[in-house]
Length: 209
Image (cartoon, rainbow, N blue to C red; front, side, top):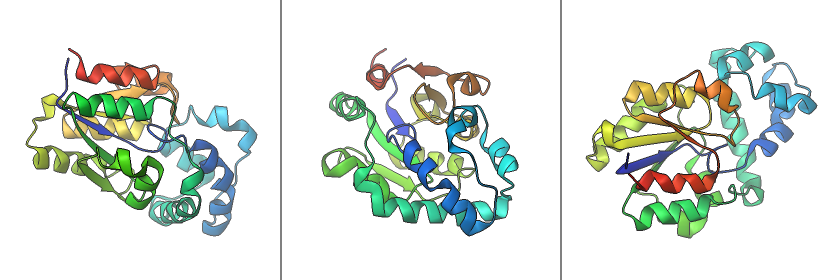
């Protein structure tokens, strides 16, 4: 199916920020009083859903916004060091050239997203909805649909975590799961995927019926 609107998550979907996330996780844990992790076990944690990970480290839901703000503030200082996944830039250019409308819905700060994308790619994104809770993306996806005047059936949200799948389902849009993100593809399949993308190059297919 060809989609008229492609909405993207950012961390783990467009940006390879997982190494940075691991590098600062224990600093954030110390600051906000939850359990540290053994970063050498990062592969195991990719099998955990967000709620499972929060339970594992003892992070209550009310502390999540505080921890998230600390993460985005730390990332602001290092955004220039965080790369996009290979092939993402070409995929965004390809979709824009074929008149697929583009948006980003991310819990990260808009400044960080724009900094990592750079001016050229940021100019291709028609709407940024950033800074919400990872559990609050559905309403932002609906906002993008309304702004563009695109029906939910003609849009896809591309992400890498179970919370992205949940938001897609709530908003009524297709969920596209990437193989290269924070969560494993096996974990994402349990959430229900309309599409899977093995590599960033396969994002080109969003514009192809």
